[in-house]
Image (cartoon, rainbow, N blue to C red; front, side, top):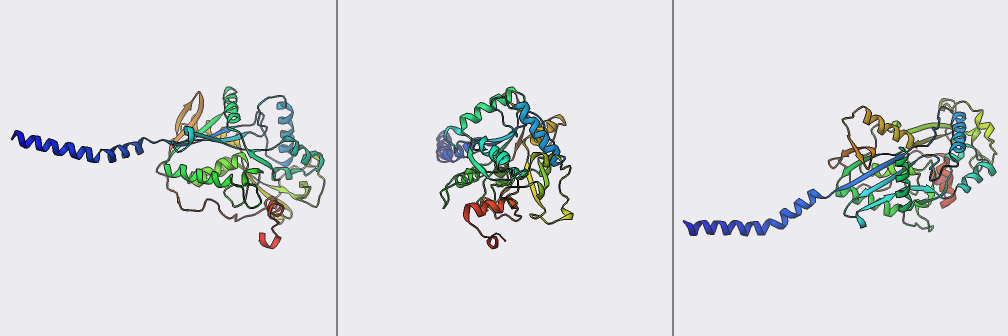
Length: 340
């Protein structure tokens, strides 16, 4: 009997040794942590989107009142943090910014493009990680920082990293999409650059984490063609006083898109910031209330969210607009017939 017991024990020890690597591997996969965090930084003074007039006047007011504030994103900002063992150092910060303020000033005050500045293509680049870290701390100290953190699968992080690699890779013309900044861009569409919020939302969209109601985070307006100038409208010069007199956005029932008005959609960091704080106040069941380094946020385990890992990283734009058409013509010399 004793010899039989020893044989059985030896048998189970051999089985344990045989299957231990498999068990350990499964345990490690369970313990792996992959997360994406969207940080929202609002404007320091509110922008009012009720009409072209209120938007213009509130933007001027915001500029004047914050011009002396260091480390300030005039229009708010969105930045993204990825955490995964797949990354060197375990994390990556990424956000899209425009090149220089001088370029914007020239377009507004010399070229007088008017509200075309909202969708005009500017020089873009990815913000240096050290600068992102610095400004996140500054905005946290100002109590002007909030976030949404998603725990995701390894496959989700791999898809996001593949997208970033392509987005930052130079194309045939020697330039990458990340080198183009503009409020009309959606980085999920082929050959387009991005704005800070558009890039953040594109990364979520890749893994089926787009907001259920995008308008809670965005503004959607129709810009009257009469306040669009420069190369976007026969080189017309638009004075700021002309914009300040425009008391309403264009009613699309009265005209033709890209002729009488330009449809415009943009995610707003300030709306996202307020949305996060409101969800915390109402004790949402969709997210867990979650703080990190005294910064208020929301947390969601999204590992079970399904997405097509084989779907193209970039899609064809279904609805074009004047800003995108001119960008494509300038960059790739695409004709009107090819755009249709």
